Length: 136
Image 1 (cartoon, one colour):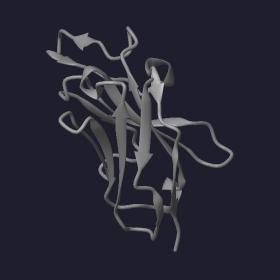
Image 2 (spheres, helix red, strand yellow):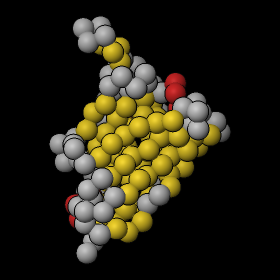
Image 3 (cartoon, helix red, strand yellow):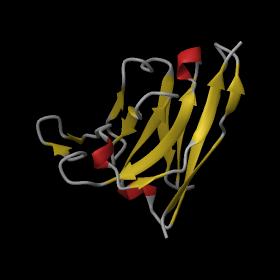
Image 4 (spheres, rainbow, N blue to C red):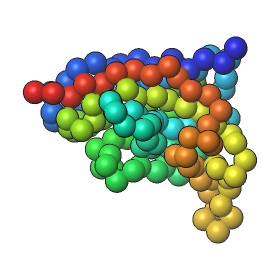
C-alpha cells in the first residue's frame, strides 16, 4: 500500500522559515516526479512546485518563487518543501504528491531534461495534508 505522509507543519509568524517533509512508503519516490500543492480555506487546491523525476527541472508558481525550495532525498525516500520567508497568504493545508502520468512529466528532447507539471491530474499518489498557519 502506497502512503505519503507529511510532517513539519504548524504555526509561524510572517518572515519565519518552515520545512515540510513527506515520507514515502510502498513507493520509491525517486521513480516519480514529485510536487507540492496547497489549499487555503474557501479556495481550490493549487499546485505550487514540482521536481522532475531526475531532479533536473524544478517549477515554482509565481506566488512562491524565490521563497520556497523543493527537494528530495532518495536515500531516505523523502521529499521536502522549505519555506524561507513565510507570509500570511501561505496559510493553507499542504499536500505532497508523486506522479508518473504520461504526458505530464515527460522528457523534453529540446531541453535535454525531464519536465514536471503542477497539474493535479499528473499525480498518482497524494499525502493526507498538513496545516501551515502564518500569522502574527
